Amino acid sequence: MESPEKRLRHEQIQYIEFLSRDLAAAKRFYSESFGWAFTDYGPEYTAFEGDFVDGGFTTGEPVNGSILVILYSENVVATKKKVESAGGTIIKDIFEFPGGRRFHFTDPDGYELAVWSE
Image (cartoon, one colour):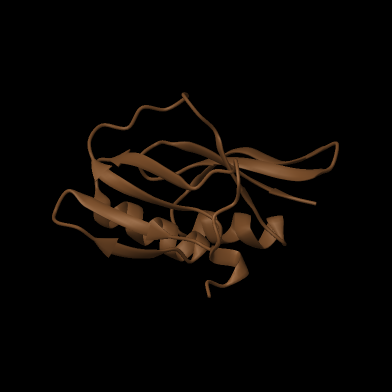
């Protein structure tokens, strides 16, 4: 039987694909920042595995602005430090909103993502 955290969640994000100029840099950044594990499928595609969503990176020119991926963190300050030390750029520092706090950053390919915490 599959563990509860790996079961597919009904009507929830299950897989995300990104374009990347540099797969090695993307793998290094996301493994250092969020602990994602990667499996390569040839020189132009790598899949990642997280606790609640899986996805992949394929070679290509990134397109920013079409979707904002938001990750959850139990400690938004500690996660921000990991993102910065892995080479991410903070573009919106930690701010409060109804229900929590979050920050926005760009990854090595220029994608904007956010991290939130309660």
